[in-house]
Length: 287
Length: 314
Image (cartoon, rainbow over all chains, first blue to last red):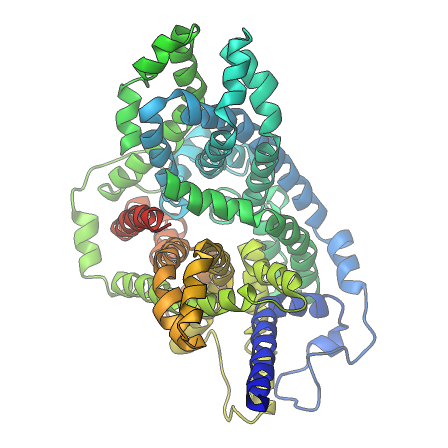
């Protein structure tokens, strides 16, 4: 009896230890952003060879100087605005294109719908890292270098396939009977879509909005290829590339920017993560 | 491929359905009509650039000019004897395989932890998701700072614990730089795999677990003989997606090392960027990037196959 209780206690302890270890591994870089953002320079730039100075904690009073520098003396707010502009337009385009397509694939396209759906999903596997070279040429041919419109044009290439796939899954989960009832009642298919289907698919569309926007926020390689002018950059390009003077990084402000930008996104995104994964895998499985 | 074929054949509504409904003839128009914008977008802005990428790899195109001259297999011939390219190809495979092997183990363990009941489970779950949800370019910068050559907190901690005699110059040594890159890949992709595997665990019928328990199987036996074999398809799906994410990654390697030191950590995508954009020889860059295709093709085929089997399993 007693041996069993001990082994049980031991297993509980092991479980908590494992949970703690995983959490520390996952969260550590965010903790590091946070503590760096508020440390005074003389607390920050102490070589790691000095074993008396513990870098894990504040050794001096925390300061707001890095955050102030970020907002007042860097183009951070401008990047935020650029990102919002590109993000809003890409979300709009994605909704207008992916929602009808998702419905068509789920309901109207029949046997072809399934194959087309898989085809569209597979294009999601064609990565930006393959396409940025031809796009570099297309964009310069269109004269859109350093223009946010280049990003507005190109970003839907990865939001549309994924969101079409996602919407297809959502529309499939709407019971057919509801629509058929509407058809029997004498509404046209289009009216049924507007009155019955779209209201039911609102959570799906909300998911599309969130994902399209966060995918835009995450994108790096296209932005790096098309935009070289600092005041035209988006957040995830400007912060790593332009918060540097020569070889000197402003680590305090840089980490402040990383923390302020990535934590809210991460929180919203992880709230929708289950839907994302359901769309990516279960959806893929059921075809 | 199905996509390109479908462009030539408009999508018909099934005949049986068409006869049953009064608005049938309209629906056969409506279907393709609603689909058309998405198809056009995908064909014009994914399909065409994709073909262009392949054409570019057979050309001596440079950025700046718009001329396009066919050089046959010359770019590829040059790559065959290019040690930098060999290294990049090896690195791509090494980074993706090593990191996903680690992810496989870590994520399965993490999923088992999250499957157990303990205080704060929901909080731990949402914290574990953070690495995957944060913008990769920004979290990579946090790692650049963590691996800093002078101020690295890892070096400080290792020294304090007496584990480190000399000094780790993380981005100055090819071996250490590889470790750093793989660490970030693992950190970034294991949450995704964990959630996928967790979802798969929920799908294992409770009766099977109970039956094993009744038969007196211990924890490890249940793990290795019941739950792991049943989880295999799901773990495979998670890892295959992870392989796609790491094979096509650009941001992590570019921001951590820029392919350095001495071009030792380039992957296909960063080498393509260096040659094609910074070096302005689009043709060469495209030839490098095209080598991603066979890798992705293998992964995609496996993915579709495993996904189908996973469906049979459940």
